[in-house]
Image 1 (cartoon, one colour):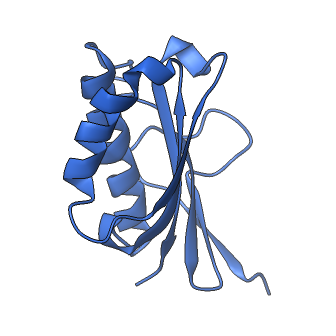
Image 2 (spheres, helix red, strand yellow):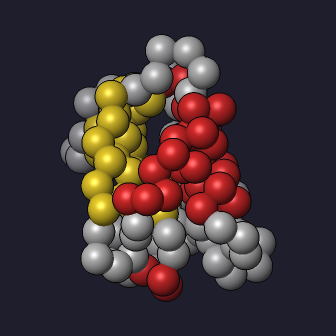
Image 3 (cartoon, one colour):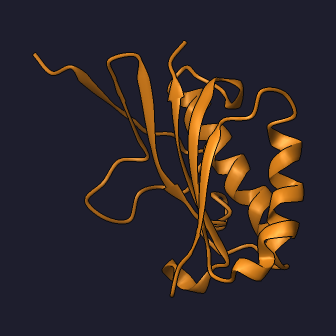
Amino acid sequence: MSNKQVVQTLNAPKAIGPYSQAIVAHGFVFCSGQIPIDPETGEVVSGGIEAQTHRVLQNLKAVLEAAGSSLDRVVKTTVFLQDIDDFALMNGVYASYFPHNPPARSTVEVARLPRGVLVEIECIALTG
């Protein structure tokens, strides 16, 4: 008997490789990194880092809800930025999604992200 549950929702972009949107195991939800793809169109959202950060967090919210969790239950995030100079703008949007008791976080600049996006965020949350 497996101690992990695969999470899938149509309210976030479907996995385009050999991975799951999230896995629930031992009281935690482990969310794969989300990029700013609109789940209805399958396209990267237009606009800059702020619009892309909103879409990423909306996608994470949908995955967490499908797993029976929420943004309020997130304990750790990792933010991947294509350009660390976008940090302040990303951080302003990010703060609006975590207004109270924000999770632990790491933010790193990376050489490149899928589909040329500006931001990707993954998270770990408590279930229930």
